[in-house]
Length: 223
Length: 207
Image: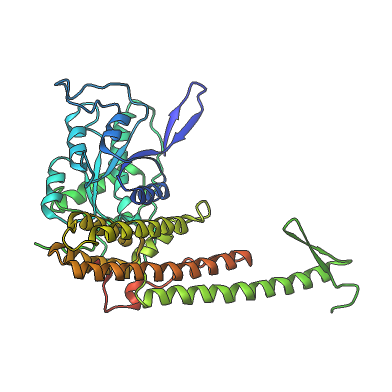
């Protein structure tokens, strides 16, 4: 949770706000609950165009300026998680629009898909997606999101007085026999302040094959 | 020592149990007996619940994704699993109907529509942990890919059977849950992993 100062000098807290995009009602309900369970505030929309609207980005390309905003955004979004396969604007299209916009490109975007298509995964990661989750998404997958959201928040609040941020990573005890990645093993032990988490994660990233490595568990890739 | 004087009486007023007695011993003995009785009932129901749940995994009706689903439920959202499952069964019914219409006339089958339906069904059954339904969808997709109408019809029938079967099973499970709660107990949260119960079948490699 982040802290804010209001005029009274009393410190209030707010949660990470995630925008979830999926055309399936069922999947929206699932991802909403998953995110709530991970202590996030959630807004769900059923299309890419509605997502852009909510952000305050004009959807059409009438003007040549990709930075044009029709209204100031009503809400602050810390992360966008979107389904890949959607009618009209796909998750990939949405990703591109967000990353092309100066105002919103810093918002981390995560893509979800029920299909394991390596070419699709690398295309999304190359376009700037932070993670690619294979459906069904699990609680353990969402713990990977916290560092991304914290990065955005810390950047925005760098002018505010130093604050103590307690990591709220919910590490659920999964009964499934899973080969934990180095990632998860470290995360399951953490009790330390967020900054050293980020450092640790950065180190992990350097050790591993890097961002282009698809991050999904338990699925064998068919080539 | 239970004397007539020390026997307590019980009364339920507005859903709360009140114990009356002349003396403290009577109350505590009575309470202990009541609690013990309640605990026994609750314990029995919990065991029944546990055994039934485990059997659903063992028989392959459910897989680990159902476990994940249950993790998402808590005191604040006690009906989450039931709601999601209900949504899923509604989807099944709708999709099966529309696919059935698409497959109706042999000379004019809309395989694209069928494929879309199977895709959705596979996705939601996978998310819910409905293992048998999901597996039928895998075969269903294969029939669709080669435009095998007969095969599709068979799969459609099977999907219909499987989802209805699961619906009944889960209804029984939820009823047991209700009974536990009504008896004042807590629903067991921990249970064996699917992979331990059925090591020959590895859920995540199906797709």
